[in-house]
Image (cartoon, rainbow, N blue to C red):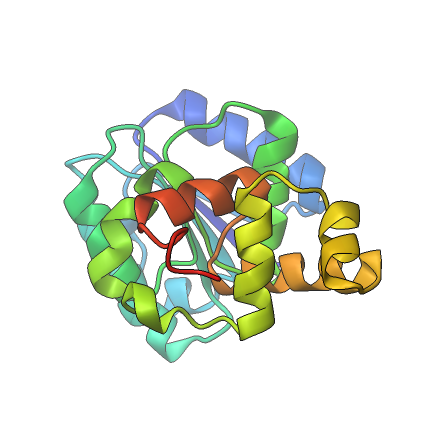
Length: 207
């Protein structure tokens, strides 16, 4: 696996280099303060790119998204400590795989990286409210009726076991439904489900 880490901060570059090397067991990591110095041929060989964005390197996001259209294997993840909403919305349109605002917990950060590498999308829950115009309307959420029902129970604070009892099914069945909900809505845990439902005003619409 070939990895590209972009940041103007040498501290962030070195820290991410060490973490990715340790986590993914690879030495094939390129670090750059400005990825625009790399050729398109170089970028086409990248499997995973982690970009610490700021006002001086935003253009690399658009450039990498174009490379991504040619190289379907490329996964792109953005670290945005400035919380640039406009860039986030553009990134959704660009097909960026992951977008986080900060690194609060090492294990969670590693979990997010592995999720993105496995083909899943991840967007910081604080930013989900800004994707409304890019997502389906509330009445067109891509969930089955049973998944909507489970989501409603999750929002009420019920455990998988409690939901299973309510619906007269097994715990495993509910666990599978919750997993599908998380995957379809690009969320990571039950709390994110609740926040998403609140932000999109769908709790009362789901029966």
